[in-house]
Image 1 (cartoon, helix red, strand yellow):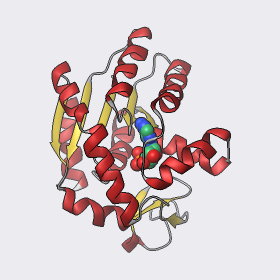
Image 2 (image 1 turned 180 degrees about the horizontal axis):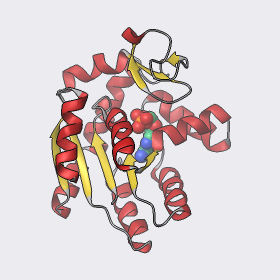
Image 3 (image 1 turned 30 degrees about the horizontal axis):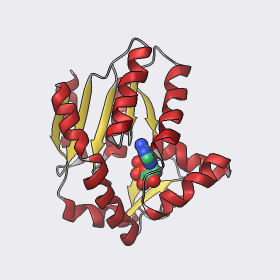
Image 4 (image 1 turned 90 degrees about the vertical axis):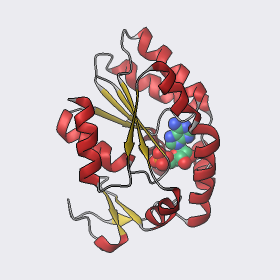
Length: 207
Ligand code: AMP
C-alpha cells in the first residue's frame, strides 16, 4: 500500500508519519528530511535547496521529483508513506507516472485539515530531535523525551517563514485536494484533534 500525507505546514504530517511507520511498517519518505540532510551535508543539492527552504518557498519540481523517483526505484516493491510530497500538481502527475512505471499505485491521499490560525503558533513552538527526528515542542525542554538527543528549532520555523509557507501551501499545494478527490482516493481527516485521535481516524481508513 502507498499513501500520501497532505496538509498545511504544521498540520501534523510528521507526527502522524512517525506513528504510521511504527504501526504499519511503511517506508517513510519525507522530502523535507531528505533536503535538510542534503543541506547539513553541504552537497550541491543542499546548497541549491537551502535558499528556497530558508525563504519558505518550494524547491523546483524537477529537483524534488528526481529525488523521489530515485528512492522509489531503489525499492520498487516497497510500501511508501510520502510526507511533504507531492506539493504541486506537477509533482502529483509525476508521482502517478513513476508509480505506474513500477507497476504500483497510490491507495490513499490523506489530507489533514487544520485551522490555519493555530498553525503559526504550533510551528513557532515546534522543536525536532537532531538524533531520532522526533517532533516535539519547546515545552519538552532541550532534551528529546524519546532518545535523549538534542532538540532544536528548524531554521524555517520562524513566524515570517511560516507565514510564507502557509501562503505557498494555499497557492501551490491545496489544489491537490481536488486532484486526489477527482482520482477517488482522497480522505479528509480533522487534524485539529489530539495526535492520538487523528491517528485513530487514519487507522480506521487504512484497516
Ligand atoms: P517540510 O519538512 O515538508 O516542511 O519541508 C521543508 C521545506 O523543504 C519546504 O518549505 C520546501 O522548501 C522544501 N520541500 C520539502 N518538500 C518539498 C516538495 N515536495 N517540493 C518542493 N519543496 C519541498
